[in-house]
Image 1: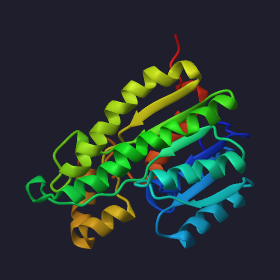
Image 2: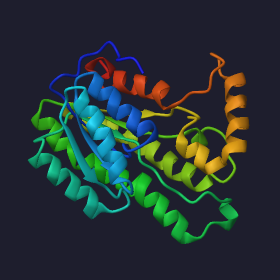
Image 3: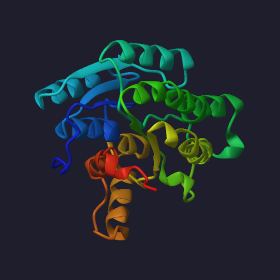
Image 4: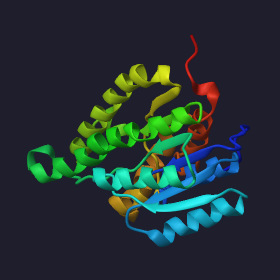
Length: 245
């Protein structure tokens, strides 16, 4: 991915789910634009450290923290650590999600509880905590990443689509609540991303078929990968993305 024509030098960014896929690509894109990056992970500390090493190779500071987005205690611990070191926050990309892929008629309460704990309850807590940190540094930007399943039917995605739709609605309300505090919050729905997680979910054969379909239906005749989406996310982290009166 080419470095976007923006300068985020002196900015501190945090990306959830940064050990792979879109989160990894976004963390590296922010580093190339000049930002220091807090890299979070849930299961793969080794992968997170690899991302952190790549951030440092760009000449930026990197901080690695475990994060369970379904736990308010974990979220609070993360932002306590961010307040201590690196000492504040300017940019936040909320990208992490997890769910159980099954038809809604087969869903059990525990499946919904887990998904909504991450994409609704955890999401809101992960916005509440950094707003004061951003205010103290003169303002900031928060991006909430949704998915194609809130716009069209994808088999087995009903639970996640409901949770992400709730997140999208909260973003619209939060934009009205925190905009005057100097913090911009934007919802991003990048559509289908042909990532490693998609490959794992679909299996190699189905992934190849889906990738070919996406290539045929995309205006540029190419299936979007993590780097393709990360570049505009980096651009949205600039002051130019803040609404003007």
